Image 1: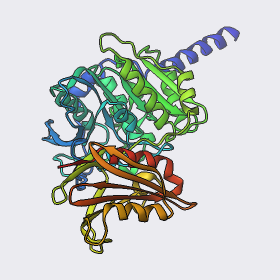
Image 2: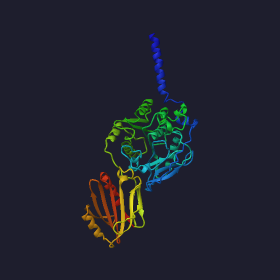
Image 3: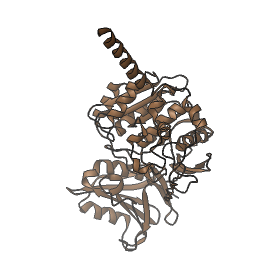
Image 4: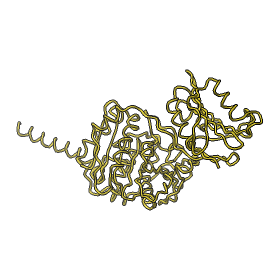
Length: 462
């Protein structure tokens, strides 16, 4: 009896082992399997969302060719420095397959899905849309055809004269994290891949968004990274907070011994707040990567240290605004718009109000800042010296006094109380006085002061 029991136990262990390894052992590679498989969609879904104009000089709207037609994308503008730069293709989460104003929106430290750390580090960023997104041709294929689109985005970027084709990286979060993990199994064209919070099997995503038959095992399998982990030949970093999709990452870790896969579960982090510190670390790693050999490495200790760092509020991407009537230009946040001021102070000849297009979301200094600019003729109702005198006897701190900015005389004054932060910069020309008045809530004053200084120091008069 004991002999039969041992035999039964051995057979059971063999069966369990076989079941566990069947996820990673295939007769064909993922690329080979995809070449013989044709997905069948149960729904034809197109996003149809409007694509906003990107800020000039920060991002360009381009269309990259794919097997279903040209697909829209935002990509960092050419630095025009004659150099080739590293680039990361960033795949956002969600199911829209489209692009929006996210790349130049405020990056929240607790949930930065904008990948702003790469842009801040000087790394070029491409945000691709996919088939069925925005006004693109084709239909959403729920993590199938979109993998081909990612490859097409790489092929487009690699041909740009200002991109280093040997230093193109891939990153994504949530649904995007699953997409880039599937791409890692499909191709080795990328330098390194960063997958934030993926799932191991497609069925663990939101099934209400699926456009294929979820009862079809093969359709599911072709969209589930866990079955194809052994095909990953690129350094791939899977990063998630211990309070996020931790079980998904643990199953991936148990399913494969592939040394190209590096999994991390970070204590004290979740699916969203891991993004800002971890992308900041990834950006630093990319900058140190020389592109000649696989020298990117990340440790759990580094990620834990990144989570402990003090939150930062990066400056917004800036674009240059030209005011032809009054003859000046300056850098302003790309999310700002401008409109004429009807009621003008002093003897103003013209006035402008700069403000965020996202002012309804005014809990950060990007969106809550406002700047009023007025230009008036000297000596009609007030001279430059009279203006300085009035400011000096008001509540403003005039200790900044007069200074020279880009060859022009300027007068700087600051006023702040428990509620508001205000700064004035007045420039004197031969005939006019141009006054820049900046305001935002006191709680954002520290970062607002840096933003105002950046704008004022960029002013050029024609």
